[in-house]
Length: 132
Image (cartoon, rainbow, N blue to C red):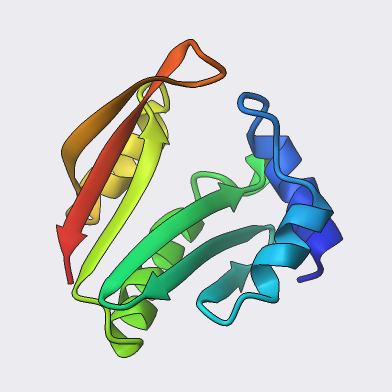
């Protein structure tokens, strides 16, 4: 998937904070710690640094939601992170993003912290993690 295609799907899923640009995705994709997993109309971007895996973003195009793509990608992310030597995975999610929070809880993530008013100065970011 090209940086432009990633940015297009991301823009369909996120309005606040502003969606990532093709330039942002291109920058991440040149970083050797970063990995991209894709499914038709969906992707997950993560990275492993030392023994920690960070789920940077997950996006499933609105018309492709509800088909299990997000769940499959999270499972692939966890497996890839383990293969790359991570022992812990973490992410942040908007407090109001109930579908994502439910998806991550199903995958074994639990809340470990909160960044107050992190998104656009109005919405909290919940910090989630899980062992691998």
